[in-house]
Length: 381
Image (cartoon, rainbow, N blue to C red):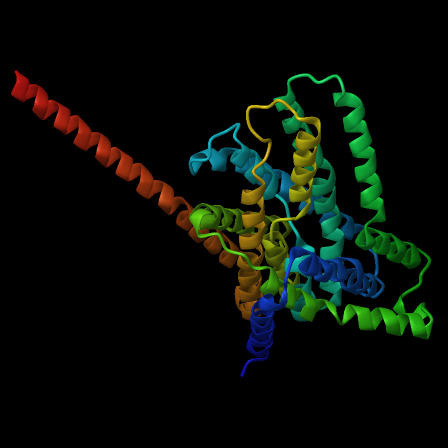
């Protein structure tokens, strides 16, 4: 059997085991503990090892810029896409989708597969690209969320000091995040010409053992974390298909313009934008909901729809995992711009199909109603 297929089957088996373990998870705190281990121990150790095995080049600085550009383009696209699929502007659902759709969470949905299929050098490049995404989800989306919140408050005197205080605490959280501290430490060591072999043996061994935890823990977490709400499934799936299609088109443009020919680099460009939606926008929404509750803010409606946000995160993780697994398993067969263009066009068409069906039904009903009114008016005459 093909090696990539065997590896994919082993990944799927770990996800299935995670699904079976879901019965053992009694509350959200237990699941949150697994997530803390991944984001605070396994992922930082993996990125630390990967960064210390590469050579920093000026061209790598382009990676976070491209990631941030992708976030901004997705944000712009979401502003036009959401009304197109029937989500009205200036509603809690609109604001919730607007923050979640452009965000990326490569740590849980992308990095394990990059490491296993593409190698540590590609993982280091993905980690550097995530710096741009972190700036977007932690700073830009936070400012957007606060602007939406204060827009509904309509001129509170405490607005400015509170905003400054929250922004300061956010910046401290950004600096204290384990992944960011590890990246800064690794880059400093690289600047002094040190790599993984320069570390003391006991430290190197401990870091490598922690790094080995990441892939199985993430896959088990995906299985344990999956939650489905059938009521919102159709709308969320439609938006995720649109999002994936736009991501493929972005990858196609980057590959074509930069003239990338190395299959591993092409696969990385295809995989990274397919990451699941980030938890950070939901964290911003939760903080604002706390403000609304504590200060008894007089608004006509909540700023965000938290239940919808949770469901988007729940659907996004397995959806992205399937897309990334498919690309990784296919390998060099899909490592070309024509595949990205084709998949982008296909997924956009699939995402647009329910909207077209709805429009045709509305047009048919309008014609039938018009015909009925005409017949009745003739009878009366």
